[in-house]
Image (cartoon, rainbow, N blue to C red):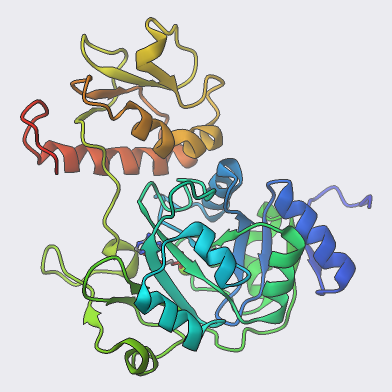
Amino acid sequence: MATSSTKKRPQIVPPTPANLEAAGRLIRAGRLVAFPTETVYGLGADATHGRAVAAIFAAKDRPRFNPLIVHLADRAAAEEAVVFDERAERLAEHLWPGALTLVLPRAAGSAISPLTSAGLDTLAIRVPGHHVTQALIAAGARPIAAPSANRSGAVSPTTAAHVAESLRSRVDMIIDGGPCPIGIESTVVDLTRPEPALLRPGGVTQEDIEAVIGPLAAAAEEGGAPRSPGRLVRHYAPRLPLRLEAEEARPGEAYLAFGAHQAAAAATVLNLSPAGDLPEAAANLFAMLRRLDRPEFTAIAVAPIPEAGLGRAINDRLRHAAAATADRPLAGGGAMG
Ligand code: AMP
Ligand code: MG
């Protein structure tokens, strides 16, 4: 459909079957679709498509990669992405579909992009109850990664008009499903430790959850100070030390390159993006760090990444990972973390 306007505007459309089919095609093509859920409006992309997930962070101007919630059609789809335990089974049975997000270990061979979970071995998943969300997931035939559909730091949108104000032309389609019935984010429960913990209060009450699995611990503090939800997440860090802003590798080091680079020894060099494309680099970041994190190297040297656009988020994660690895005993001593 041609538009006579020169200024690109997001299409705000009602959730008709034809529009949902078009939205599904956009998702499969790696594009961004904003959509209603029972909690808040989400900014969605194919969770298995690294570049599409990178586009979410770029559209939000997020200065860091936070792990995103993956929205799935049903329990069967969830079991392909994560490993359920008995507590997860009971919560899913009683409180899904609904405003409850479960953090669980990633399933081996899960198709979800490492960028979706910011490189972590855990994944936050939810089966939403809103009929438009379910229709979009069905039309896209993909798990949908989605944070709230607003610029970083802004309040979460609960109408399509809020989304349009905040993201304007940065999204390919906005589905208008009316105001969100709950209007606050989902409750996030961490089931990756022996004690289940409440990471974020939200649309499902703590009482409802405790009625199913018993007492929830408050999220474990690591420094004692109060922490915001995003900071409750343990961050991914490789075992090897990282050396940042490295123009080249020293003997014994693996090298994570960016942009034009003459690969000296191909076995020890991976390039985040030979073309110098930041969304491509973001999509490759966690998977490549893992591939280079091998005991035959002394460290991973990382090329300078421009501090602009998604480069800020990439550098934020690299600095966190470098700080985390600097605290550990040096490699070679059999420190198995
Ligand atoms: P939002 O991006 O606003 O939808 O928020 C997502 C919430 O889920 C944040 O509070 C994250 O910290 C949390 N979250 C997502 N994935 C994980 C994970 N793998 N481990 C712990 N918390 C997570
Ligand atoms: Mg948000």
